[in-house]
Length: 245
Ligand SMILES: Cc1cc2nc3c(=O)[nH]c(=O)nc-3n(C[C@H](O)[C@H](O)[C@H](O)COP(=O)(O)O)c2cc1C
Image 1 (cartoon, rainbow, N blue to C red):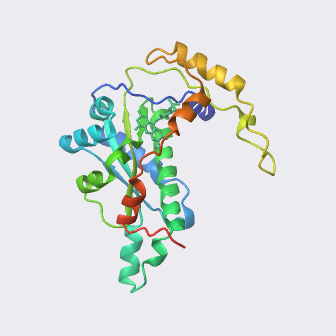
Image 2 (cartoon, rainbow, N blue to C red):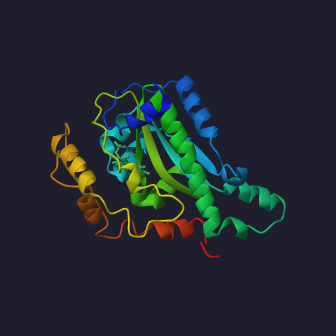
């Protein structure tokens, strides 16, 4: 299958065989993660392979995605990580302030996400299924405790990877003309969502499980009707990111 074809068949998998991923497969996945672009080559991420069943079960409960986090072939946590740089700067008797602003935090979150998506694509190319698990951000303080995270690290999301038993249908995406433009942002545009809403409506009505009667715009209005995870900012600051300047 060519790469675009593989990408266009992406679906999040939430039902896995219990078979664990082999060390060979994990090494390939980590090599894919290792190979992404990195802002100024900071390589500001760490991937934790969660093998301890008790830790994994608690992460599953925190993320409210219990069944599939507990059962997939592997569960990995992606940590935005400037602790390495902190050690280098300390050894060099330099100030840590440049690691603590919003720009550095963005650099680390972007690097981590690129690594994760490389790993996801590699897994899918091997016939495995994946699901990102942002649910770990439901209780970051406890996640940091469980994973023994030092200052200047923030766990962004988990990822389940394993052999799929059930696969959903592909979710229709925004059409190209609703997220690309030439030269300037089309202030009046990106609002032709009627056809897309219909496509998503049909998808939700007829998918194999958890059918619902809604459109994409409705799901967005509902999702953003309340503040999501208001404790994240406090946690990020507690980890040492001052996010000023
Ligand atoms: C950063 C991130 C966090 C996510 N967190 C969760 C999660 O906690 N639980 C879950 O079931 N799906 C999670 N997802 C999967 C999304 O719900 C899914 O990608 C989206 O609905 C599109 O569906 P698809 O991946 O099947 O195309 C997450 C996706 C991303 C990118």
